[in-house]
Amino acid sequence: MKTPKHVPSWPTLPVASLRDQAADSPAPDDLVAHVREQGIETPLYVTPRPDGTVQVIEGRTELAAAVAAELETVPVTYRPLISVQALSSHPENARLDVTVPPTLRASVAADGVRIPLLVTPSLRIIDGHLRYAAAVETGVKLVPYTIDDRDEAGQVLDMITTARHRQALTEGEEMGALFRASSLGADTRRLAAAAGITQKETKARVRVGRSRAATTAAHTTHASTYALTLDHLTQLAELEEMDAVAAQAVMAEVEAHPDRDHRWTIQRAHEDVQARIDADKHRAALEEQGARIRDLHELADHAERADHFPGDHAECQGHVWVLESPSASEYTPYCANPAVFHPRAAEEQGGAGTAAAPQGESAEERRAARRAVIEGNRDWDAAQKIRREWLADLIGRKSHPKAVADQFNALMARELYAGSGVLFSKGGGAWRQAAEWLGADTADRDALIDRAQQPRRVAAHAFAVLAAAYEDAVPRTAWRVESYEYREARPRVRRWLTWLTELGYEPTPIEAAVIADEAYEPAAH
Image 1: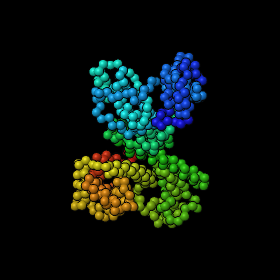
Image 2: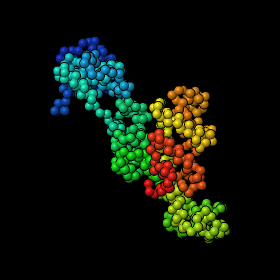
Image 3: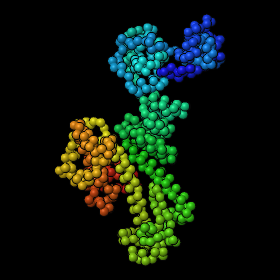
Image 4: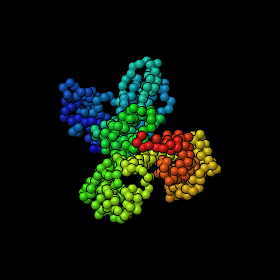
């Protein structure tokens, strides 16, 4: 038996359970032959009875044909359906544009029209013109309907009311609904058609919908300037899978401050949990090898990192492993007593300390400073990732408002005539990063040059190269006021970050400290 095209999958009931409700008159031979070959295309309209059985309201002749054709089951519907050919648009339709959105067309093609059309007794459509048009375009023959007996003035007012008071689901609500539909058996193709998105996006949204933290964050921030993107919601969902407590803390922060940018918070929390997981794996491997592991506070003041002393430390009796920071992803080797196990090296470095350590600084102060560097570097790495995501989004847009294009040109002019020379010293390979942001093929430089000459894209391409050059010239140590590169790099980095804020970028706390030329304290954030 062939399945007709564009026919939704109807529920079915056994013919045997409905046989006694078939029409008294025999079904026409041509109908029986058609049903035997094609099955029943139009479902029987049935209603449930209190005793659990159903009553056939429409389709008794088709049921008789199914009995004669010896079908085992017949399709049924529990709501009235009408042929689209019997319907007509309302002459006073308030909606002038009845172009069917691609997402609605895909949904109707996959599952038919699910929301009943509101029609007059004369079968003119009051509400549902787009659904009706989608059914016609996709070949769906039957649609659900409800009769409304309002007068003509009321019909027109209904069109206004139904259109005006529609409210789309928030992203969080949609993701939660997709997950629930998935858990109830809907496959990815069906979910994608209903939501009007790709199957890849659907899988990501279902994963997010599984996460209470992510769906709550999406719903909380959907109207904010800093609405979370699918990538960051996915990251939050991953965080909840790894550590529910950490995700709960982020969710609480989002709910307390819905108008703030929480991308950095999510990024850092995700990195911290991942680092802890990596550190636990490293510790397990070390323990399997018989290594000695110590807490940092257990070390004596004269203990030093093993890389401060030359030679192979594998046989050193003072060799221990230490997790230097809560966010460190691996353990660091230390020598518990350099004066005993590396006397010559310790003597050359001035006793138990190191040549680089400031005079009078205690071991705990040095370790605290190192922990701060580790934490600060992680903060900077997280900020850099968010900043480059923002740049990719800004540069990759198909068009930019004139004000933004003018700003691109102004930044280029500053760099050409009053900048730091970054464009000339670092720009040699910057076009590759620029091409990636622009979604271009880096293997075809000539094509990229052709695209850059398009009048509306010149400014974006020029800015992309400038941005790539600056990003390449930003050192990881830019946040550290005591670093060797501070005096040279800080002015350049401050200028770059300040320019980005002029374009609408919201700096993270560590970037804000650099812009203000202030010291950054990782523990304070």
